[in-house]
Length: 428
Image 1: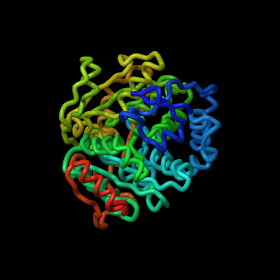
Image 2: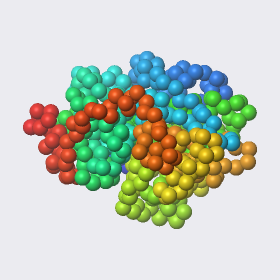
Image 3: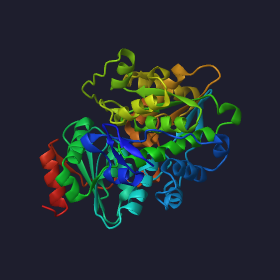
Image 4: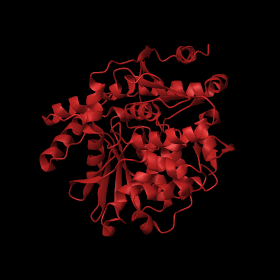
């Protein structure tokens, strides 16, 4: 698989090199300059999840790399991703049946196993920023993995208590860092670290954010899984509504479309509406990030947007092909209450935004699928308050509630972070 730096096309790498590097020169993202469609999509959709995913990922990565791929996929994708009817002609793709109850389990588990296969004897340090679910999935995926240390940055007080518990209570090779700031500042620290070539080499730096191509490719697979569960007569008119933060999830969906999946997309955002405003006015003007109920979407400068634009250009599509929108917290709450009253389906805030904007943009004859990216129990306090119910905690959350946080706190200062990483690893 040939991948190019979107900021410097002269930097060309293989899939394995891209996974190890994470990000290219000048903070450029790695991405292919073409995607070959898959023949016989109908046959592919009739396969079970693991077998289909093996074929999709082998097609993307190629036959010359990662001989362990099929074993990795079977191990990583060990849980279901069911679609559940939530309303008339609208289904939820429930991506929260993995170990940390969030869609990030797909990408994080795949990436962890790929890195384990290709790192050889090199020590790696995973440095990643999270606005919620990435950190938990990465922590679980890499926990106690030999030769890999993990540092997870997240904005203090701006992720849910249960999300934080899943990140900050493990210890050992997983180090949680609360940053006195917003997610974008956490993300900037990661980018700065990758620009520091001496530091990068010293600690074997890598990132598990969706900037890493392995994460994105893993997520392509569940779009096929969603469509495969529909009756055959509904498979040609599917609309996916994706709750968008860093825009990795929708990039994966667009790769699936490039491979031949017949679908279109709704870009669903909260009050951090940089992209909806850009698609409306043509002016890219990020505002200051604001905290919302849907905290994983509280990102004003989405890292993966350049990949979306590159893919749109590559395929000869138009940004005008997207439906899009944004919602306030007040409207998010109303949506959660209305659907629960109508059908009994329990939405958490991210899924609520995706559901509502899908409902607003669904045309006659289309089948809608919105992505349920996290279990409602991960936002128990808000869901209980809004819906007047008592959401039961799955065992994965029950086991962490009483555990003590091991998180370290710091200001959003790169030198402070650098000293922390070097000192903790005994390299200073």
